[in-house]
Length: 249
Length: 304
Image (cartoon, rainbow over all chains, first blue to last red; front, side):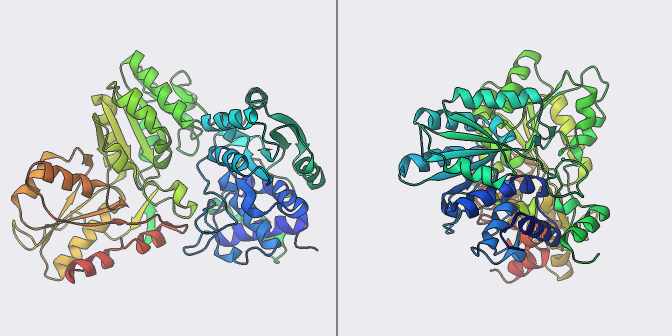
């Protein structure tokens, strides 16, 4: 199995969170294929990917590990490690900005794309995150400036901390994006080839890709799409995760 | 040092006492109904419970509108670091206009552990201290926290109640030792919130080592209570502050500023964070910050 295959990445993600006992499994899993398409299939440099939904950092780290960019998954969320719970920039060129406070990454990405128009930038955010005022403000600027070198991918997994995102709220998201002047595209967020093709498409302006995803995708042991925090796993979930990664429990 | 349950649970515990009451408070949050244990309250009082989604600035602005039209009994509940995202609304819509709102800030300090710096609330006291009409609280145990929230809601005015997910799991003596040095101990150790138990252990260990020390638990961290200021004026023992907050802008800094403004400056030994914490379990982060009792005692005794 290739270490960059979808299955291998998913096992690596589960293994890392199971071993550490911390981190957001569902939100990381829903964005994993988008992350792989961006960094592996299209080859966007990690330093030009802004993970605005910073709580999905495990997905970023797993993909970086698969491409040889990091080798310390075992140190995830440990003092002294670069692999913090939410991405932290510091001196690490692979993380362009610190995230974890939702919405901010969109503004950062807009500024970076404005300042470096000859480079392609990708910003990955969550559907719930678009509720932040700063997200709408940044999208308005990005839409107004028609940044052909910026693609915003929204991981539409349909959930936020308080529960499922309603259909009305999902429609509102699309209305907000459309009103910003950005171009809207739709894609299956678990179809890596489709996501990659979307990222490589030439555009007239700033593109916003609404990628439909499922937090449970490829993880049959997850009973619901509600977030699974690795520090609150039940013994049943833990056993199922061990079986999934094939370590003989 | 491991971790124990902190004071976050005081919020759902207080709200449980309000279910069904005619004067049940309005509660505003930003996508944190379940994480803050408010599901029952939101189900019981849908007309007074408002989840604005992931939109902290809207949460504070909405609460100001409710407070202005109802006169008060309004709670805004967020993680402590997320309040910082809405400081403009707190400053202009709430503090300036003297609204009666209780800001319940859960997950303060570094107790959110491995989530990392974006989720650590370590500068909130410094920022909220600049508000003109706010009273800041940092209760040391769940019972005190419930009473603090209740008193704040019932009393009116602007309050910021600082709660924590965890506290260091220390074997703190209760009641705290009063020291061996009579009225003039060598050290007067003040602490609030998650560090209350740590301070008790520090005093106990100093006491056991023949070093006189006195413990003072501080719930109201701003304005500094008159009783604490009077003690600082009158006694010459070394003032020590232990807090899960940046050392240079928390309660210690507020105490120093009040003393200086009164023309009676005092040196304070301040134990807290000096740099952003990293990602790790809370007990590891407290140790890295030098907030373990043995570390503090060693530094006090050796006069480091």
